[in-house]
Image (cartoon, rainbow, N blue to C red; front, side, top):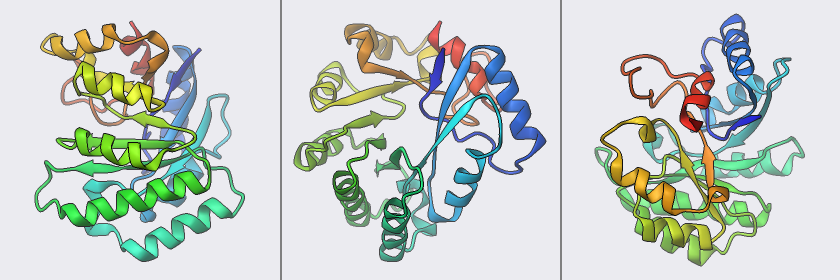
Length: 230
């Protein structure tokens, strides 16, 4: 059984395309997928994609991604997120959330407020978090130390050092590994991954993004998870 811990699927359009994606995933042994949200505007699509009947189980996560700052209405969206969490409807994690200092006009203070608020919600509702981190991992680790989350989570698309990997594992966090690992140039990342205990690693595709080596320019799919595992 393969568990894709991070896949956005192709949320638009849903329907036959979604069923085809899930059929192909099931054919190679993928049985479970976590589908994270990135902004309030796509939460309903995330939820709906997890309710379409299929043998591949899908689990929704909801969050406010740092790369979508222009679409966030910070306080209103945080109130809406808590309403979703308190409604009793199934949400398996908060995410994607995190920090990205690579984007144009990163609005760092705003990112920090949103990240900290989502960590607080994760602690209050005892949920894991799915973290996006780019050029910000040391600060992410600092905030995680302060948050002391009960359920931990995963750092999606991990690309840090061995020291950072070990710090995250000690904090109860997994390393999300996907398409980046399949590139021959990713020797440093491969060394970090093999230095870690196998139970610290979670497989992901980030489909339809982050294509694997040899598939550049193509839409990624959960059916590629077996190649990541190999």
